[in-house]
Amino acid sequence: MSDAFTLDSLLTSSPIFYNEAFKQNQGVGMVSQRTRNRLVKELIDLGVSDYAVLNVIKTTPRHLFLDEAMASRSYENTALPIGFAQTISHPWAVAKMSAWLFQNGPLCKVLEIGTGSGYQTAILAQLSKHVYSVERIEPLLTKAVSVLTKLQFNNIKLTLSDGHWGWPAYAKYDGIISAASPEKLPEELIEQLAVGGRLVMPLGGSDKQLLYGFVKTETAYTEECLGEVLFVPMKTGLVKAEKV
Ligand code: SAH
Image 1 (cartoon, helix red, strand yellow):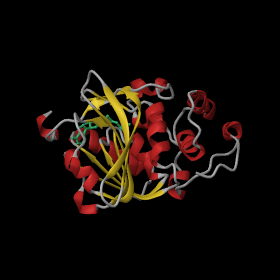
Image 2 (image 1 turned 90 degrees about the vertical axis):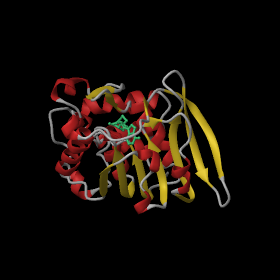
Image 3 (image 1 turned 90 degrees about the horizontal axis):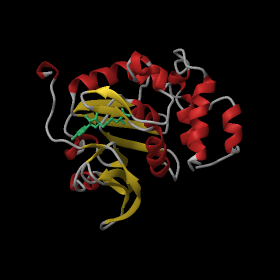
Image 4 (image 1 turned 180 degrees about the vertical axis):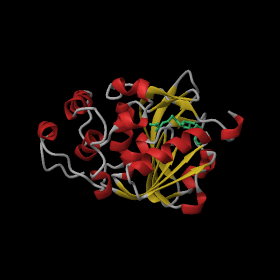
């Protein structure tokens, strides 16, 4: 990804906006740019160096994806509860996965498994032309739709579905990302990648998970282990609003 500035200047420069409609809305809320910059600085100290990814983390109002009771902690580098035993992704994990996914620049079509709060979806939507995101818990999906609509994203499609099966209707994807960890790689996700497409996801049960990056080739795929991580498990089936 092109890096016309130094990372230090990222903290002091005006943010670059990749989505004009979102530009009008990103300042909503009560959290100062200084608080957001502190998070960006922490990510830089942890080794994140992708300028475009750091820039979208800087401009994305994470507090709007959390309940008010959590808002004061929203720029801490930690996962936080969003209800239904799920968490908003750890900013470091969002940065690490996004930097790997977008290492050759913005992508056209990206599929996300596990919308959750919609925070990672908002990051993806600033680095991709089209984002498709699936979530299995209906009340979480409804909330995410409401925040993403309020922020005027116009390049995101969301659906209630079990992500083990991907989202075949819009395949093939240039990138796929999952914030939920299955025991083993769902082959459907590889099938729904375009040749040259990239898939980043954790694999493994709740005791030990490893983050993997896969790149689809003409005949198979390559894989790279990106380190140890901790995500929620990828579960099967749907949780409908009337059942909770
Ligand atoms: N990136 C999200 C992370 C949410 S946690 C955020 O920042 O908020 C992971 C999400 O994956 C949860 O919302 C969980 O319900 C969802 N999930 C788990 N298994 C799934 C499956 N099989 N299909 C779709 N979503 C799934």
